[in-house]
Length: 114
Image (cartoon, rainbow, N blue to C red):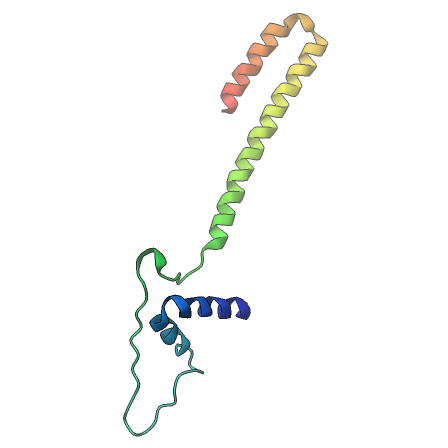
């Protein structure tokens, strides 16, 4: 993880040198020691706004959960379609004379499934 942060900070240093300087000294371990002479270094943090702004909170897990919930619904529809056509094949094998009626019932079931 530290390697990825180092690569990201190097990329930011090339794109936004003033932002990279602010982020470099943001860690308490990297801040200059305060001297008693009274001269303090004050850096103004200027971050880009809009789409280029860095994320303050990562919500990547929420998108994965949303995708999983959608896939459960798709899996349920596929299972229902499979059961409908399996019942159609079994019904036609047992009574071939009801082929048209069974197909009509299968289409009605597809309408309910949608």
